[in-house]
Length: 215
Image (cartoon, rainbow, N blue to C red; front, side):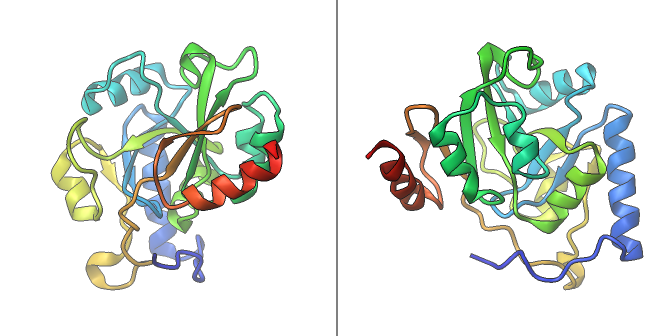
């Protein structure tokens, strides 16, 4: 898997301009495609109901199926969840390719936690984290593809999907980027029980941590 923790500066003028443009699109209710360490994501601001509705529509996702809440750090994610030993143990794997589906705190907006469950992730790709930091710390996200199709793995593929109003440049087309996305979707774990709902890069590490919690 490529190393996405290489030096990265939001102060680079081209990067800063692209991030500003992406945030402007999100704030006016648009959708943004962005790279992560797994696959390309498609994001909407959670506080913009029309954008959330459109995210589900372009994805072709049923309204009762929640999408992921991507967060800028573990603290922002844990603020939405009911505390628990397994959640705390697995949160040590953030940032990284792990999504935790866990009971939300009472009062969490339905857009974030339909049915009382919230799917939390903290990506490790520097562009994804920079976007989150600039746009309030949380975004509703799903993989950048229509339901039933393979997700985008490059900016060109994300553009060809024609789902986003703005595709965040990752520098790959001119050779200056952080490397291609990993291509393997995140491990998804249901809490508090710890069932693996989708296999992914961190299955073994998750099993070891949960054994320590439940053992």
